[in-house]
Amino acid sequence: MPFFWHFCSALKTFRIVFFASALLLLGVLMLSSFRHAPESDHYTKEELGQQLFFDKGLSLDSSVSCASCHIPAFAFSDTVALSKGFQGRLGLRNAPSVMNMKFRDLMFYDGRAKSLRDQVHFPIADPNEMNLAYEVAIQRIAANPVYAKAFQQLYQSAPDAINIADAIASFEETLESSETPFDRYMSGDTNAISESAKRGRELFLGDKAKCFDCHFGPDFTGDEFRNIGLYNGKEDKDAGRFNVTKDSADLGKFKVPGLRNIGVTGPYMHDGRFKTLDAVINYYNNPSAFVRDPKNIDPLLQAPLNLSKAEKEDLKNFLLSLTDKRFNNR
Ligand code: HEC
Ligand code: HEC
Image 1 (tube, rainbow, N blue to C red):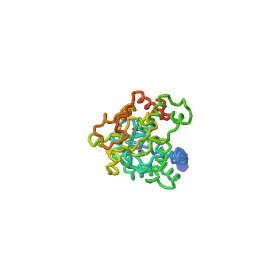
Image 2 (image 1 turned 180 degrees about the vertical axis):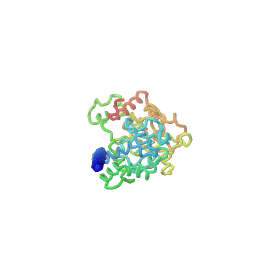
Image 3 (image 1 turned 90 degrees about the vertical axis):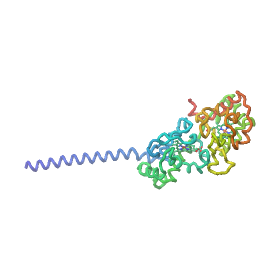
Image 4 (image 1 turned 30 degrees about the vertical axis):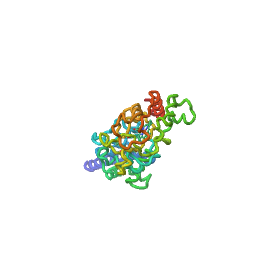
């Protein structure tokens, strides 16, 4: 009897322990699925792309995300001339804003990527940026159950080179500007920009400053490659578009950047050489004062513009009117 009793009570303890652990395990499983499942169930392509854009796991040592260099508060650009990538390595060019990319075609200052989607694998694989083979990035993403599930739901497929790029690009395409003082002015609110900015707009469009000849269209770029005189083959060696086409007509040409949010995306130009818009405007006013013997400079910029101090200020105020409302508190 005592033996039987002991056996019974041991069995009982065992049962209690067994059921308790089973319950605990179930609880943990349910909790973790609650934490992830509803999120991934509700992912849109854009939200999935946003997660990936901010995910440091896309770099070899999980230290750098796209957003490390394309910082949201600065219209998704960087605040330094050359960004720090993998283990602090510096790249060769300035990180531009990735806002207003929806209507762009070729990507990068030299146009070496054919589209926003084609662009995605470059920074991931670049040894100076994220330094992770794209195939390894794909494996990492596939190994994450939340991502794997989201890709299955959105693309009916495991994560791959094409759908990862599509998700990230879909997110970038949501970053379109709106609600700038300039846009309000254009839609009839005559007080949305200052008198100085209005004069600056006339200058920008006109024959004296000639900016609109290259910075045209709704985002102030015609997506062409032009040479503004920052290449001389000596100190200034980046040959831009020529590196891709090997056509001597392209020596020193760079993709004309859009100018929306230009007030918050400094430093400026492909190498970030100008810290301020004043410096940019002074440059355009007389390029030859800055670069010795520029090669292949655009005919539009061969003679000084002769802008007065007041005109320069007006031009700057116009450029500042292109800043989105959400960046306006700086
Ligand atoms: C280490 C900094 C760094 C990281 C990380 C980085 N970028 Fe960039 N990005 C740059 C630089 C620098 C350029 C300009 C390079 C050039 O033109 O040759 C650039 C250019 C771009 C462009 C082209 C914009 C244009 O106007 O042509 C896009 C789009 C872009 N990056 C998106 C991304 C995405 C998406 C990621 C993450 C997968 C990413 N970047 C990660 C620095 C970075
Ligand atoms: C001949 C064509 C051309 C003309 C004219 C021109 N630009 Fe540009 N602009 C460019 C190109 C190309 C770049 C990029 C050059 C580089 O990065 O090296 C650029 C860059 C800029 C930038 C820096 C953008 C950034 O994100 O770093 C600003 C600001 C700018 N231009 C404003 C102006 C203003 C203001 C005028 C008129 C005074 C003007 N541009 C006239 C072609 C032109």
